[in-house]
Length: 137
Image (tube, rainbow, N blue to C red):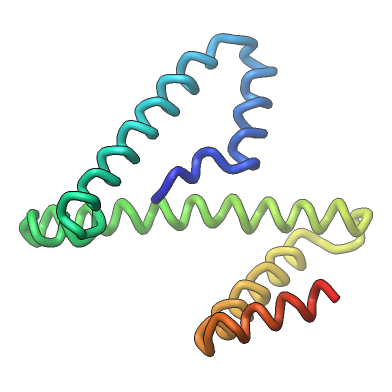
């Protein structure tokens, strides 16, 4: 996971939590952001020194049990982050269609377009760029 907690959806959720709790949670958000940036910097330093990414370093340095536990925790984190993106897109489509498209329809559209992009990416970056150019035109 990169610095995914700074995307617009998370910032909006943090703002809504701030509205509810006033300024009681602002310090938690501040320190969590600083700690996250510090960890990102450490990961970048590991990459600069060893030439490996964080996953390669963990694979080389840890025995199988901690490696698998790290892998499971990371997969759960990725699934949780992706779920909020899919649900957010479904809600956006629901609102953009003036509540005519049900939420499950928005989820299905999001799933289909994700797999379409993955399928096109398999054939190279130029095909994916051409598809986006077609959508924009």
